[in-house]
Structures are given as structure tokens and as C-alpha cells.
Image (cartoon, rainbow, N blue to C red; front, side, top):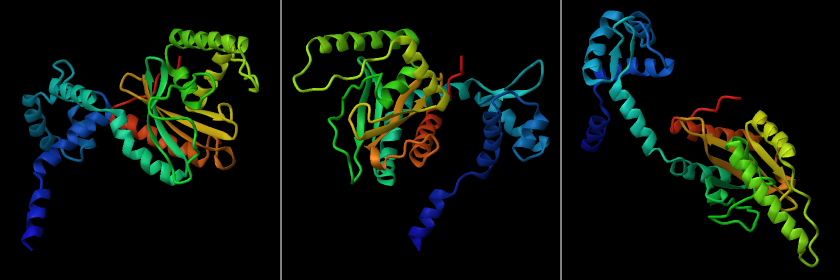
Length: 277
């Protein structure tokens, strides 16, 4: 009985703080300064009730009032807290427990890739019980041209940077063709920059990327992007599995699950989708 009372006491908050917090939530939701009557209405209270909260929040720097319009907006302390929160937000740390659950639900391997010094690099891999064993481990760098994760990053990275990587891949391809491995079939030629641009436009149109047996025969993959507060892509959430059981439809179960996971991480780090050119 005493334990129950202790738990209840720990859970009990300060109601006035929670009530006043609705004003902050309303400002955050609308993303702009608001007149008192509108702000109070959105917070579910009268202007007379809202005003004392706004005065106190103003003294703390959480809210400030525009001297010309009289509208209320978020103050300098709110901005500082937001910036500190963004600095502390680690998308890989947030996504790691999510991909474990995702791999179990989908029945496919799920990984996290970030942009490294040599291109898209896998930093986390979570295998499903029915995992497809491919030559991939933590630290694996993948191609930007024929992998789902690689094309996804290429679609959202600066064009000059992506083009330079493409030219590097094309140079390596020429060397490999000049010294073919005995008994190995020749790989299909890499796209030109113009051809690759069309592929990347298709990735951006769907908001995610997929590959169907292009890297390893019989293995498919889909990848969804995570964006930060500037609209830059910081991470890819990628599912990999046998083509026979892997749903690569843009509106299929795997695509929906990957988007949901990536969007959740983006939201946690204050991310926003980039503005289309």
C-alpha cells in the first residue's frame, strides 16, 4: 500500500505548469507569433486566464511579446532549449531499438546507414530470424549507384559531391573491366550522370529507394530517409531480404513500415523534409 502511495506521489505533477504548458504547445504547433485571444483559444482557456502565464513565461524568456503587434511568440530561452535538444539528439541512438522491433515484424534484416567519408556506410544491422546472409557488417560502405541506401543518399546529397563519387565508381569499373576476374560475369555498366540524375529524380518523387536483385541476385532492399532540422538527410533505414518474399511495392507493408520508422526518428530530432527545387 505504501509503495502504491509513493508511485502515485512520484507521478503527481504540478497542474498549473501543465495548464500553462498548453500555451507553449500551441505556439510550437502553429510555428508563428499569435495574438492573445487566438493563443488562449488554442490552449483551451480564456485570455484572462492565459495572460498571467504569459507574463511569467516572458520573465523566464520562454515567451516574448512583439512591441508593435502585441503578438506572443517563443522567446530566447525556448530557442536555446531547442538548439541544445537538437545537439543532444542522436538519430542512430534513437533508431537502434526501433530497427530491432522492425526486423522482427518484417521478417527481414534491417540496417542503419549514415554518410561517411567514403559514402553510405552501415553502422547498425539487426538480423531477423530468417536472415539473408550477405557479405555485410558494421562499417560496410555501399555503392551509390546500385544499392537502395546508396541511391537514397545520392538523391539528397549535394549534386557536385554525388557526381564526384559516381565518377570514382566509373573509374573503378573501367579498371575492373580491364582486368576481369576469371569465371565472373561482367557487371552491367554504370549509368552516366544524366542517366543517374533521372534515377535520383524518381527516388525523390517516391521519397524512398529500392533495389531488386541488382547487387546480389535474389536479394532486394528498400530504404527510407531521416532528415535533420535543416532538411539534410542524415540517415537511411534499410530493409534487406530475399526477393521471393520481399514486398518492394511503394505502398507495400515494408515501405510503410520503413517510412513510419524514419519519420519517427526525423520527428524526434526536429527534422523536416527538404524543399523541392
